[in-house]
Image (cartoon, rainbow, N blue to C red; front, side, top):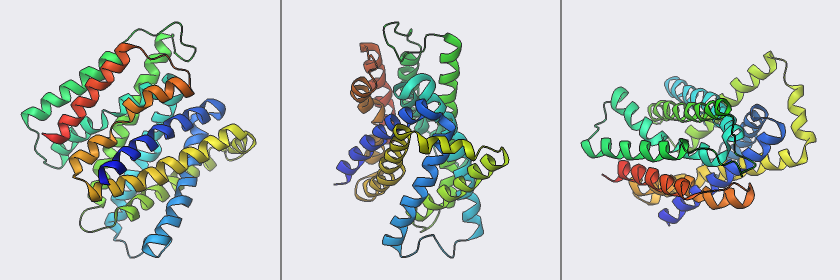
Amino acid sequence: MGELAALATSLMWTFTSIFFTIGGREVGSTIVNRSRLLLAVVFLSLTHLLTLGTIFPVGVEPERYFWLGLSGIIGLVIGDAFLFQAFVMVGPRISMLLMALVPVISTFLAWVFLGETLGLWQLVAIGITVSGIAWVVLESPRQDDPHTITDPRHRLLGILAGLGGAFGQSFGLIAAKQGLAGDFPVLSGVLIRMVVAVIVIWAVTALRGNLRRTAILLKNRKALLAVVGGSAVGPFIGVWLSLVAVHLAPVGIASTLMALAPVLILPIAHFFLHDRVGFRAVFGTVIALGGVAMIFMV
């Protein structure tokens, strides 16, 4: 059941990237990002109430608030802002592949900041992962694909945005690990991260006078359905299934199976977004995911 939950988590996160790409192309990535965070808080608060008895965690130490809040700002506000921009600029397939670097970056950061060990085979696995991703990303754009960005500068900016998303997620995970130390419920930690991220991102939106702009989303039915769908299957169902997976299966196996989104997205992006996927993209993605698997399994 744990392994099935991990596979389902990958599938949910795959569909999340499709939904948010559709919404971002309709109304822009910034509106999608702040709207989905608000919806995610609603979903997670109800889940917290049903499972733990309160709509929000109570009696939490200030230090935990600091680390979880910092994690939310770095990972969900800054990191996801870059990721959502990458969805729009280079599409979900390349973006999700770049996010496969999160375990690689997180492993290095844990080595530097948390003193976790980094063995020879993990270094080899990191090299394999980076090589596979580079092979796909450096492929010449397909001229016959209507969604492929052929402008080199625009494509480079999209790739840099994807890398920014990966670094944001990695730093966010390191901060979250500090906040979840001990016997603190993971669901409560996720909710605190989300609430802090919502407060920050909507405060910035208000200060910049862009609250009314968000109303565009409510008038665009296609974008609204995409954001609601993405928020439900990603931050809500996806996060819940990931907790089940980690609880019932070994962490290494669960983490590897949950990292399969770049592979699962290949046929889905082809059929839903009409992306043209060549042999190099498939083979490079499989190599990259093989490296990710090695990081967790060795």
